[in-house]
Length: 264
Image (tube, rainbow, N blue to C red; front, side, top):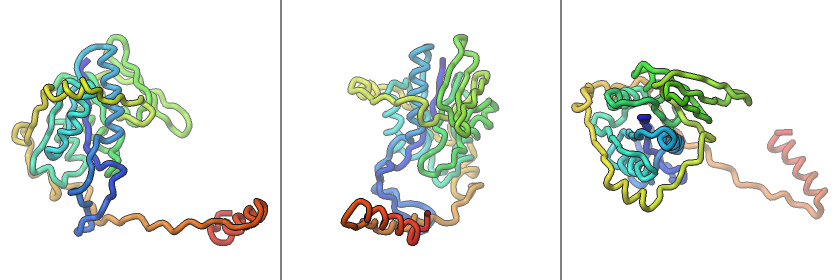
């Protein structure tokens, strides 16, 4: 089977995020960047399907040159080749424009199934996967925790958690599947895999190569506009409950929860 994984590079969740002076973006200079964790589940699932059915895994990333680091990570895990979509006009694009660029990059590549993360942990939109399927004119299944490809490779059955239950969806292939936590446990890249990744093909494509109109991308073409970003309120200092006995501490805790926290 031919499998494509679309990945995004996001700030490490342990990084300290600071707002830029414009109040609409974040400072990016000192951030550590990693593969979006949900996309990592997609890479792992693609590799497992390849191991079962054969074929190839192509990883597609979009953004500045540094995104090649995340693509190389996927190649070190076992993917076969990578594509980076990089163009100055991309800066400031929204999720719909991102999906349009990804669709242009993959439409001429043979594929049976496309994986994306169910959302990026930065913007938290969950739009790119479904929009990509719409641009390609194929079905999509979102927030998936189990994938079963039929033996003939012509259909896929997926499990999606819904309100404490499980929704089982079956679709013909090709299709887009967005990966949720619980789908699998991503493997670590081995040292031999890291060495091999350096020699695997990684192609870079611009808008001109993809036949895209730069005016449809960037800040000015956004359908979803960021008006303002505000940091979360600072947490108040914790309070230690005092008392001579466990009983007195429990009584004081109950009073605080009732009179100050007002939760009981």
